[in-house]
Length: 209
Image (cartoon, rainbow, N blue to C red; front, side, top):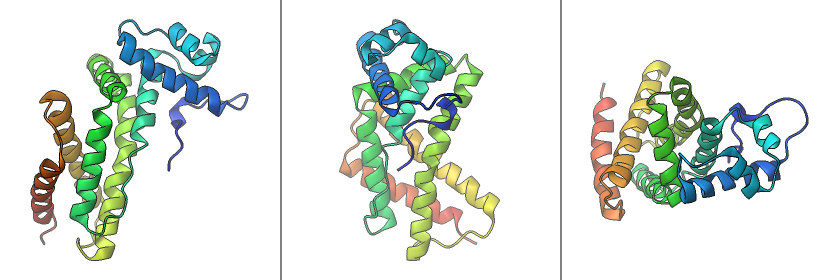
């Protein structure tokens, strides 16, 4: 499991308190659900977390960075258990991802930072590095496992392999986010199975010689 606190949030100086970090990020998610983005303040988060406001400012430059790291911690919970086949692995992580997105704190926080990032390029970059790029580990792990099983051929070209992994992530994450947060439709086992069949058909086409 990856460290819960993103490298981007760490600073030099005195050793940071893991308990304080956990309390601050949890308080941030609670405040987002109860207050929304516009009313959330670092002062309120500090009060909820039981820390001084200066403690937050030593760790995060502002609200946007704090909220991104609070969301990133949730996405770090995603795992890819070995369910015996590529199809089963995909279905499992799709259902896990959808369940995560259905949680009020995830939904509120993610939609808030995405909305803010439309006019904030540094925030978009932080979302990419702290959430998107880190979760591509699931795609890389799943493809490597499938290749070891003989379900997918190896890809000797590293650039082509990276581009394929990016595409798989974009298609999967985009479909689940749209289904869950935009269309507000359920992602159940039947939908996950049909999506997986569609994805595997496209994946087979990308690995043809």
